[in-house]
Image (cartoon, rainbow, N blue to C red; front, side, top):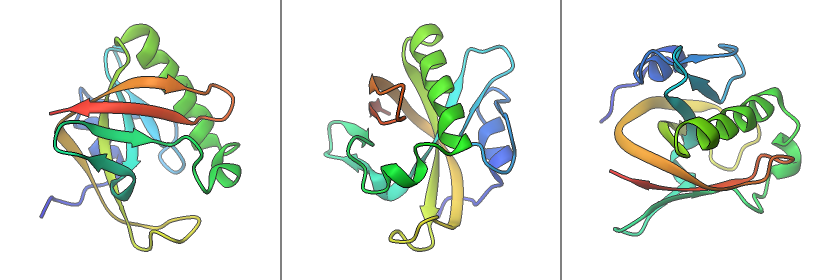
Length: 135
């Protein structure tokens, strides 16, 4: 089982990345701007054995989270990754106590040290995005 960490320590695992706000941030950036870190719910990541995918397009809860501060900041960090990091970002995985709840409560969080995701598409208005990863 992967060690449960605070969100601050999970972000900092990747080049000392720091979130804008310790309470509502869904993403972070390293002080030198070379690393972007995004939180992803473990149950919303698919792995077909070849490609690891996170696809938040047409998400069932989009209307509930699209205007939240965490999403607005994540959009800025994804744009930064696209423009300054070749679209790549690192991942902190979140495990939900109840995947059907909104808002979700976090049972566990941890950085995935091997996973690197690449942004494929981003809707800058809503925050919907698709990314594919490799280990």
